Image 1 (cartoon, helix red, strand yellow):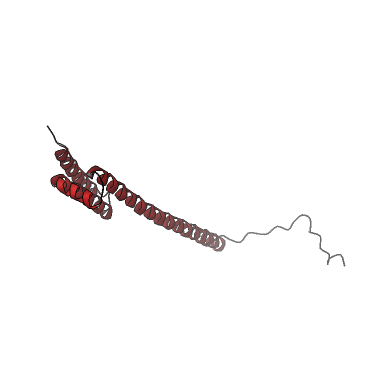
Image 2 (cartoon, helix red, strand yellow):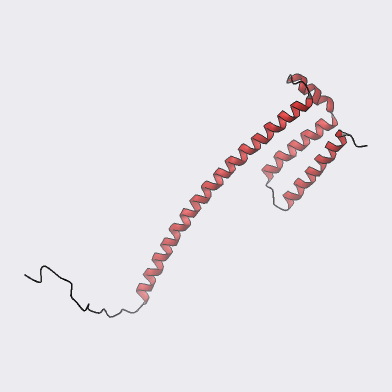
Length: 140
């Protein structure tokens, strides 16, 4: 029969393997993998030495170690969410800046193409309008 400790160890080992696979395929950046490796190592340590979880719960004045683990897990996930939100905001700002730069470059390219076509096309004969526009000076 598998105990909870063995299950936690197996789950953490699978998580570490998954993290290394994601790192090798470049689907996960190193700084994010570091966070998850530290979390999984913390769970491995608590699975190997469950008495530390009881000691930590007594130090933190929490009734049961499970409540301490849930509270710690929520705190870690909250910090990860805040970090990812700041990264997302930074990327949105970079995207907006790059979009503005591309729009300006397209405007410059259009101007250069118009200037080039003006210089390379032969001059066209300009037709006189059929009706001359009214001019107040001409009638004087």
